[in-house]
Length: 147
Image (cartoon, rainbow, N blue to C red; front, side, top):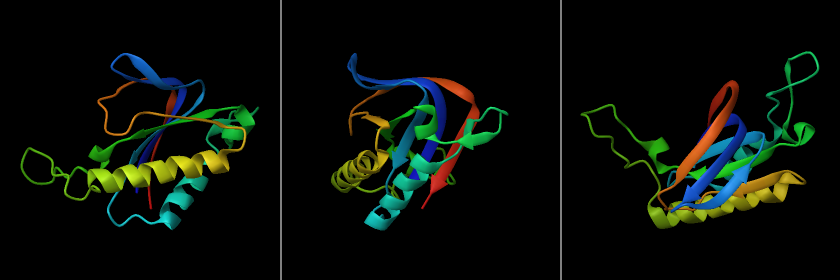
């Protein structure tokens, strides 16, 4: 599983003009899945994201997590995270899970995030749809996570 996590002031996903997910401060999570991903990997990633301490405390140090700042999570499927552009000029997506398996992994991952989130709001995009993602960054905090 690969994730690009962006700390945001706000983020929104639209499909054909319809808002499918929207958060205020928190994390925009772009999630890609491989055919070899396991439940243990999905669980680890959900727990890692929810526990990351990348929000500033009173001294400006990244010491607070989502729950402490009342943040939300917006999860968007992104198979292109498995794009390999090392050869030629067109990326290969052979390492990405096939669509039906990826859908199951995505739904399981979202379920785990929601289950473990407690009071943290969890929103989503729409798997397989052409999505417009709009966000306002909250500082230069972008992490790549892989498990």
